[in-house]
Figure (tube, rainbow, N blue to C red):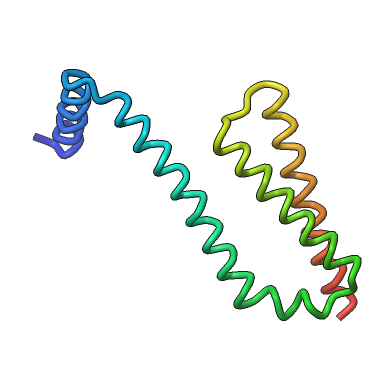
Length: 118
């Protein structure tokens, strides 16, 4: 038996157990908890990166550049959190993508301008 067939059989057995024992609510609950834990893990990694590398460099920037950069990052965090928790569709998805792109552009442009002056 190939590993692919074996893994499909294991997946089918797990699905049958979930359906037979009526565990759909438990699966949804675990999925939501895992989604929240994933968001927290991303936030912790981003914070540790900022604490080790970004804080020293950003402290040398002008006040305006610092405010623009942190505002772009904060709006991007809110946008990603909203995207992950609600799953936008249609126009909301378009707006979420445009906001993320604008935040990325503002942060990158601010960082790049500060690199050219140093």
